[in-house]
Length: 162
Image (tube, rainbow, N blue to C red; front, side, top):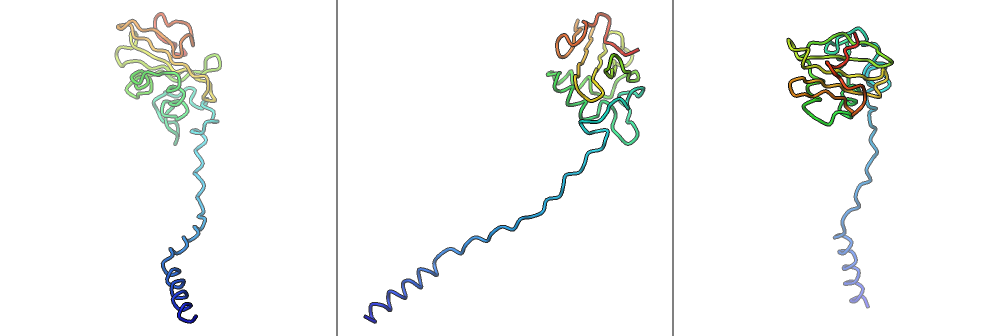
């Protein structure tokens, strides 16, 4: 019997040695809270602080109106054409100060030294909603709003708020 138990015991001991060790239990790690965005760049911010300012110039420590994330996102949501978005949100423009017209901020821009036939405007509520973009290009015979019918057809250019 001893002869039988010794090999059996030895086999059990060796089998236990070949087992994989249990994986360590991961310890939870603390995550740092995400930084709070500034008041002027949060989605709930009031863009009316930009009334009277030029759309391409920074306001205090905040980015320019056209660099505000909520303005850029709102324009991207209504203008599917990448080239039109780049034109409207670009900084190489002649611009007028932002005006508040019928509850919307109107930021007007145009091609330097060629404003009459090439201009555009962004109209958006102070809370960053209900955006519309006007594009007027006399040479290409384009006069339209994004989204369609967001405003009256621009006959001699986009509204400037003046």
